[in-house]
Length: 335
Ligand code: UD1
Image (tube, protein in one colour):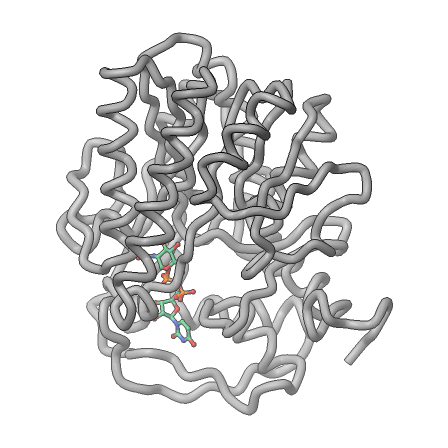
């Protein structure tokens, strides 16, 4: 199938593009390349550089490339930044995404896979979080994701859109080949930062709080491999055949992992020391967030290939140690 991957040069999008090619689909990437990386994409793929909010361009591409399914990964995703500049987030993640939906509607393309996030739950419900937990976002970023989920629901009823919505827990890891991986600027996520400490690029990892009501006092998260996330997207294609239906899945390995356990996993993968110190809690962090993904397992036959944190961190280490400056690294540059 011809799949328009909006935001396909980003972290999760670029992994999904490779899987689409591997499974016999034809991905066409649509990305403004402001936060994504052209180098994350295989040479075989068509890349259209453009803005999500450019109704005319998106509409043309949908028709010209005979698109059947749109995958929408193009979102800004920094919780802190969303609180400092909410307009940027609502403009990009909401307003421009509405232009995408309008272009889809007018072009007669009504199948969409949407990247949502567990962040929509805020701290309202205890983990494990299943799809029946109520959304209660506590950041502007979370609101943009929850709002777009609702919008898709209305679009399904009004215009017959069919959608698969995936709420990722903590997307992590990198392609097993070591060729592509995570490269954010600035980097705020735990695993890449801990790896930067192991590589000597940072002196010490700041652990945000060790006084939570968790087994070791640090926050618990559910780290799920980026290739497992991609697999779920492709498995959902048959679900999109029925017009007017929305399918929502929480994607995680269902295993809570603490910040200190991540330190240990990085030390193990790298055979190096990760120095850390304790800092105050970070605003907006919930003590624990992990998934109940039984719906994805039962309905889609989804089975994470990286079910434990050591296997996830090993792939992240392979990527970062071979590309210490991300996509700006020289080939085979090693620390
Ligand atoms: C959050 C969202 C996730 C979203 C992501 C977008 C929740 C539960 N998760 O991930 O859905 O996709 O933002 O960016 O809302 N930490 C440190 N030191 C650091 C960095 C992180 O101690 O330098 C800790 C954090 O306090 C947290 C854990 O590590 O407990 C993971 O943090 P991070 O990698 O930033 O992801 P989340 O904030 O959990």
